[in-house]
Image (cartoon, rainbow, N blue to C red; front, side, top):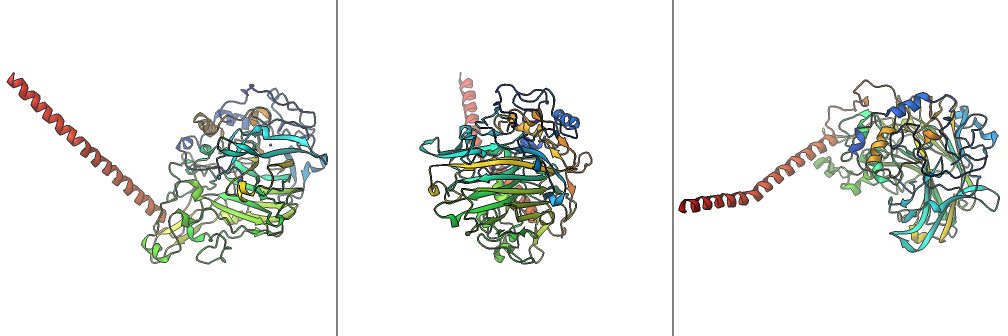
Length: 601
């Protein structure tokens, strides 16, 4: 199911699809330049554990080989290549259709590719079967760009490389409140996959103020459409822990840990005038975040394991000159209202909150980066970045992982053991405990995003621009999955998104539906079940935190919030009575006067 929850047979036909040659299947967008905002959406919650009949029907009908749905392909889609990979571009070299050097050496088959060889492609909604170019202002991260479909196309460069081009142009006059035009391409509700290896070959402009990014986002959230991400971005956990606070009216997390995780394959800045200042960042955005004492102060490296404060996530691996991104761990807890490291404050007010009601305040950025002269050649030449993604098992410290490779060299890993563990801080002398339950390596169906924006929060923003017009180029996007773990489709049967997005579409949270939906281009194939069956009525896995005998600081906050709500309600009632009393007395006096006048008459 897609954003309307319709069946696979009612593909919209309003807009024709750009014709392409026989080599090209149609088809391409982070904090990246479009990290979704997040708050909480009760409207989504009611549908979070139910799937539409269309979702189930399409999943059941999927062939194990991923064959196309005959008679429902958009007019531009050529026949699939001989190996019957519906989403694969026929122009992809045969030598890379299988790889043995990804995903721990598992035999992996190509399940998606786009080589961008056909010039002049249009990515406006309804013009392409693989990608949608947004047509809206970028209002995330204090961005200053308007995303315009006209700013992205395909072209052949001077070296004869056919590539996607995202043109960012500084405007002579503002477009609304935005000072530049650029583009974001996203595969939302078209091509989604769960797990595998995704590789992108790209070339960045040497222009420091730009924010190019390549990232993945769970299909429950649509990047830049911030209302669609409320309460789901970037949650990824599956534990019944009632003491864990949720943002505002958010409830989808309670439904088996549903969410829209974010994996930033690459965010970067390349400078021509100061190449030594060029850098690249690789990140996982995740929620719920660690208790405050585990967060290092900005600018400092994490403390050794076992240290009382700032030890961060354990078991992260670095290589190839990459190191922890000590400049951003997420919004510092201190900026949310209290210094958690002050012993006096801890004793007097163990939870001094208020707990951040907006998701951006409750997100950890598990991030690594390279800079300091190591990336002097980042701009102006072709590079590759690859993410190997093994979804979490939720069964122990071994299993899932996220691994990044830059130009074929390993640079960063987030193993499941760093996430699937309890992080708890209990205050001394019988004080309350702050607990973050185990989280999962993302296992939600995700889509690829290619984006370039300009933001005041990144590389000096518009003040750092070294040229008024620059292009972010992408040679190809390729995705492989292990032979026994092919999982392609935007609404898997065990983690469906169709009915939830239908609700979001009715509420206007996701904008126009993506046309055509992915299920109308290629049948989904789901050979892996990511989450176990749960008993009827169950929502998530049972969880008992360490030291259950000690109160939860979150519970203290919940009680305080309840007391505050009761106090405010009582105050409002007293105020209303006080306001109405003079009116009642005046009416009573008027009735007495009327009665006296009638007697006199």
